[in-house]
Image (cartoon, rainbow, N blue to C red):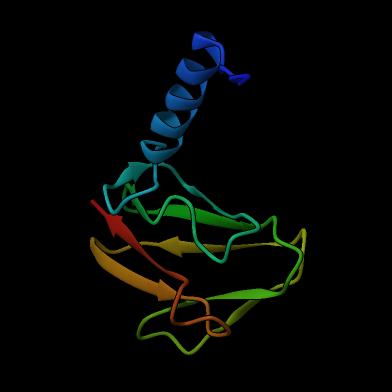
Length: 115
């Protein structure tokens, strides 16, 4: 009987890649200090929670192959983003601002925390 063995270095590489992916910045609800939010091809905002200074402008960039949007809770403006497009929103008052993709509300939610 012939056995197929995986080289030890390959097993270690796989474990390292999985651990790195699971601990990627912005993959959880921990705030990330940035003014850039990406919409990768996965129906999520990355990072999910951003922390910015008062008066900052946050830029969302759609890297997905589908149209998405950004709407800050309590605001009537819906910013539609076709693939490759960006939108910007300025935050002048301290507070926590929830936002959502109005086309994919179940999956795509985020928060901007303004100091």
